[in-house]
Length: 281
Ligand code: KIV
Picture: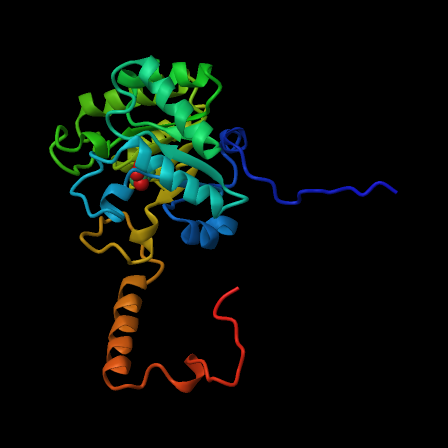
């Protein structure tokens, strides 16, 4: 008898996500490390190794300044910790804007060195040539329009986008430019709700919202925000699903008290001479 090995839970592909238009909403979170990817993998469709890690993990003031090498290292970590979710990795600022050739070079490095399912880059009309070139090279691209954190200083801070007629229309044009260039889906960040709803209702590719609209075809949050771990500031669009930051502080406080009062370690945590116990496997 031939033994059939069936993978019951194969990794979700970018194409799978691209087919989720007007379907069950896409569930996405950011992830930057192996243990976090392990915890999230069964509960999301997509893990984004976002360049938000510049702020969330490295304490930088903005997402600008993180290198392609660092994104690749975190992409490898997230791939090691996941088997099921589609893993998408951000191209960082400075790695794709100059030309379509530069964009393809960077995207190729990301995919070849991590094995991830695709890349994300910020920008609509202005980045259509880059998206088209990467897609032509066989690499799936997730677009990102609306509030663009890599351009935040130019846009005058983290401001909601699309409030006046000109900006509203420009973001609609961006959405079409990204879709026409061949992106499998597009993140819409920080826009007025009606704009994200209109784009979602007309565009043929799925939209993934963050501070956008419940009408989007999916939602993404920065994992440290939703866990209550990153508390420098919490935008209105974040819903807290955990209080990890306070849990960590409380655990550290308890540890401090136990060490100083010699309540830790107890005999259960040390190695008596007569027992031959392995320290680690
Ligand atoms: O870098 C990131 O985390 C992102 C999300 C906010 C979509 O781009």
